Amino acid sequence: MGENFKAHSLLQAKNIMTRLGLDEYRGEQVFKWIWQKNATDFLKMTNVPKELRTFFESRYTITGPAVAAVRQGNEDVKKYLLELEDGEHIESVFIREEKRRTVCVSCQVGCPLGCKFCATALIGFKRNLYAYEIADQVRVIQADVDDKCTNVVFMGMGEPLLNYEQVVAALEIISSPLALSIGRRHTTVSTVGLLGGIESLLKSPIRVKLAISLNFADEEKRKELMPVAKSNPLRDLLRLAKAYSLKKEMVTFEYVMIDKINDGLRDARSLLRLLRGIPSKINLIPYNEHPRLPYKRPADEKIERFYRSLLDSHHTVVIRKSRGQRILAGCGQLAGDS
Image 1 (cartoon, rainbow, N blue to C red):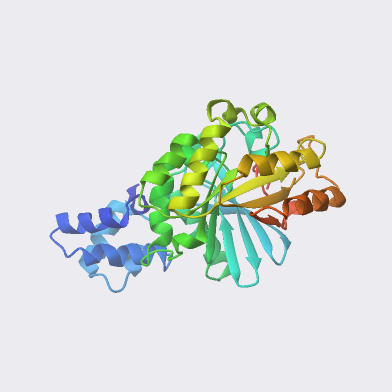
Image 2 (cartoon, rainbow, N blue to C red):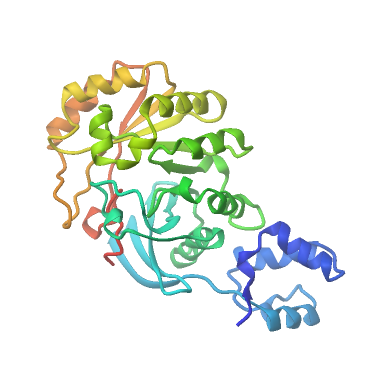
């Protein structure tokens, strides 16, 4: 079996053509066939010379993840179990909301960080995804729902900034007008707060939205339930978050509300003190329960009381309307349970 052509970026595809003595626009043609027209056969690329099609067919393949299972919670949410070429599985989620068509993509098979309230941690870590495997989640879902996706969030399985180079390469495919053509301002990368990865994003020319899973204003509690916090102190994390808000896009702090752990008014006051002076949005996420984990969602009254206690701040505060919990498609529920 030949090499998977999807493993090549647009620049690499152009360079392949140049080495063959051809105009580099031929690389653009092939790239567009693969990512926009879902081509799996070089011979069907009708605007490419026949001899070139035959040459590539003999040396390369065009393969991607296969849909192993689909679960639909309602007409707005679908969860996909995708089988990769090596037999590993990941999950992706499609959410339809008014004019938005959002795909939540995974960037790792499993996750190594061990956040105690996240179902993905139950899998452990198997491997990083390649850039084309990340971008292919969007392509596969677009083809299945027969609709153009408008937004991409890196909030599925895995920690994006632990797979930084492949995530950046995937962003190139996702935003390219010759590929998936979803703008960077409609793309969000979520992280538990890896200092090195955030610094890399700050120094790079990439301009995407950044969401930081803060979850706890108390650093000791954060270290207990998010072990990664032990090597990524809050003080440094907040410094980088402020820099990102001022230099690039306003940061969103995600706060998963867990019953009797971080949902009290004292927690709310601590959160506001912690984020004072940082231009940011606070995204409250009522915990999405999982049958294999002991944590619970707070009562609606507690969520509302917590929310109202934040409204006098200078932050934009929203309660995320969770979707797909019944099919385990909500934030923190992805664990290959399809």
